[in-house]
Amino acid sequence: MKQKQILKISISFLVIVGILVAVILCGRSFGFLKSNIANTKVDLGTSEIYSEQDLQAAADVILKEIGSWSSVKEVYTISYCEDERASAELGYCQMLKDENYVQCVVFESSFISAGSSQSGGFNPNSLYEDWQWFLARTADGEWELLTWGY
Image (tube, rainbow, N blue to C red):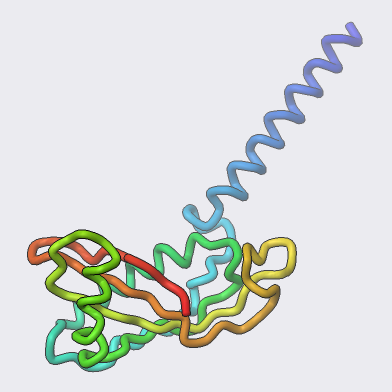
């Protein structure tokens, strides 16, 4: 009788732990936990090359990526770096990956890293500004995030 009771308690405990792990791991996706991009200000600037929809699609790729980083506590801004910079960096983007990219965009962001136990290579609780994001696309493709950093 006592063994059955211990077994029931053990199984219940494991189920609860499993549910908690699932909520923690998937919390941002389901909105249970605060997202690090919930208050991000996106500045698409002005462009003679890209539509607002083009730039928003690129920004969304960045937000999806950085939104998944537990090492970032909060993303403050993401800003398009203007057409001149985008045009100048197309060759760099083509060097990063052997694709026939025809368009490139560059964004900068600012964010604060998480605390020491979750900093993931960033200095804990530190402000990062001018963090760059390089995206490119082929003639009929979607924006592809190629690299990021300083």
